[in-house]
Structure formats: C-alpha cells, structure tokens
View 1 (cartoon, rainbow, N blue to C red):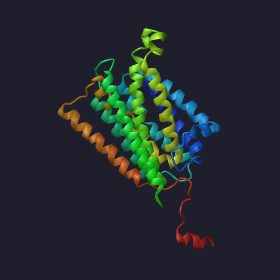
View 2: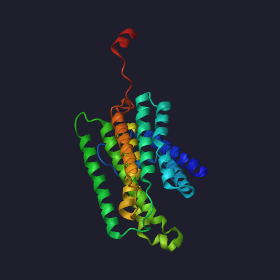
View 3: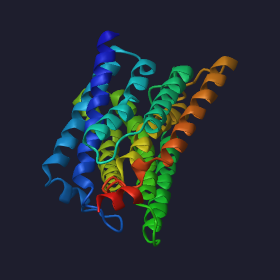
View 4: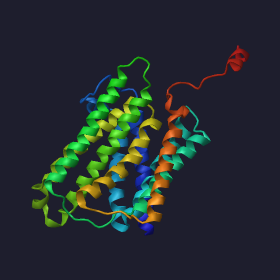
Length: 302
C-alpha cells in the first residue's frame, strides 16, 4: 500500500506540473476558433514539450500505482493534483493565492476523494458490448461538440471573459479524458493475450485517436484562459465521468447503503461549493493582468 500511495503522489505531482508547463506554453498561442494546427505550434515550445513529457511520466506512475493499490485508494490521491497546481500558482503566479482559493481547492479535492471512497466502484465485466461503446462514444462526442459550440460562441461575444471559455473547454476535456480512461480499461484486458491480440483490437486505435483529440482539446482549454478556470474540469470531471462510464459500460456497481449515499451527497456538495467559490476568485479574472492598485495608493505614488 505504501508503494501505491507514493506512486500516486508522484503521478499527481507530475500531472500538475504538466498542466502548469502546458499553460505557460499555450497562454500566448490562443486562437479565435478551434485550430487543428495548435499542437504543431505548441510542440516547438520547450516548456510545452516538458509538460507533455511530465504528463507521460504521470500516466506511467498512475498505472504503476494501480498495480500496487486499489482504484479507491489511488484515485483520491490523484485528486491532489489541483492542490499542487495551486502551489505552483502561489510560487510563480503573478497573483497571490488567497485563503479562500486554497479552501475552494481543498473542498473540491476532498469532495472528489470522499465521493470515490464512498462509492467504491467494483465488480463488473472485462469487456463491454459493442452497442454500449457506440452509445458512450457518441454521448461523449456530443458533450465535447456542445462544449466547443458554447466555448467558441462565447469567444465571439464582446466582453466575454476568457475564463468562461477555459472553464467550458476544461470541463469538456475532463469528460473526454474519462472516456479515454474507459478505453484504456478495455485495452488493458487484452494485454495478457499477446501482441497480435492487442494490435488487432479496435480499442488500441480508438485510444490513439481519442487520446490525440483530447490532447488537442486540452491544449485549447489551456490556451483559452487562466489555469484556475480550466484545471477543476480536468481534475474533477475526469474521474467522475470515468466512474459513470464504468457503471454504464462494464456493469460496475457502487455502494448504495443509506450512509454511503449520504456521504456521496455530502461529497458532491463539497465539490459544487468549491467550484462555486473558485468561480468568483480573482485567479480567473486574468493571470496576466496586474493586480489592481487602489486609488489612494496610486495618488500617493504620484
């Protein structure tokens, strides 16, 4: 269990580092619409490539952590990614992270961890029927396309805040990563059957396509606005959507006792409260804008 905890902490730190580095690389590469060539511009920036490498290391550590520990143990630790991101923002950000921001992040992480521990998804089958995969894939695609329409519709409105676009794209990215996680689960069930079984299975190619598309979507989210706006969608909706897909596709079941449901409701309330508090934070106003100077101080400085 100790190995699983340490590996999960390492994975959480690496994914947080990835988000920060990719935001630094993408913040000046935004576009007015969906740009399929965005990744080709970003790959020329060393800081963005460093973030991509950190993402890959984090993924390897996550898989290793799941080898030594249960999902119910590892996933809540991975939610600490948001706290690590706020730590980075406190050190290198142009705006200070206030106590209210820390409390909002802690509420979201605690709520997610508490929900996953109380739900404890388990059981199920190794493979999902084809028609369920079609439904899951089309639903996930519909959510992403709807988010793109909303996000870039906001971008055409005068005075629309970049943070709103970043938040919408971040939420869509979280849903998309959840679908990718479900595909990885399907593919992992074939790993013991040899190379031929892997390369002839549809899940490998869906993973490559969906993974590349989600990376492009995440890059748009990071380029659209402040990291504090997009990161909650990455951190919260990824495991939640993956858990829902586990129930739908693989027939997993969650704990449904009265106490379990009460804890799950409390956990969701913590998440919603944290998101609501963060939505009013000065961090999403614009990380590149200098902090406002009170009129009295400006007069004094003159």
